[in-house]
Length: 107
Image 1 (tube, helix red, strand yellow):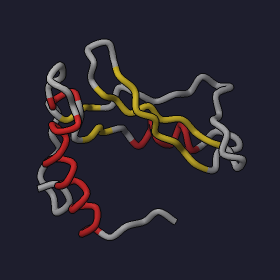
Image 2 (cartoon, rainbow, N blue to C red):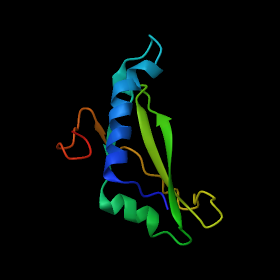
Image 3 (cartoon, one colour):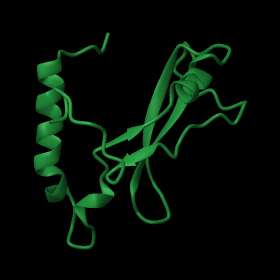
């Protein structure tokens, strides 16, 4: 199981915030690397409710404005992507500019 404690998650987020600009070359602004993306419960359930779904997978992609985006698909028990229904989730609310409220995880 991939559950982590709040403290570990917070440390990972802080480390990413601190270093995200360092992983880019001079051609890119740090803002192309999102801090988070928010998806609706309905979107996530549409993946999880597919026949054969045992997991869901997040890929990293880049949109036409060169912004890094999350792309999510369901995966079956053999770890294969479930693609028959063309159900691929993207276009979450990207932060920035859609910053979530501060919490114990992201302040």
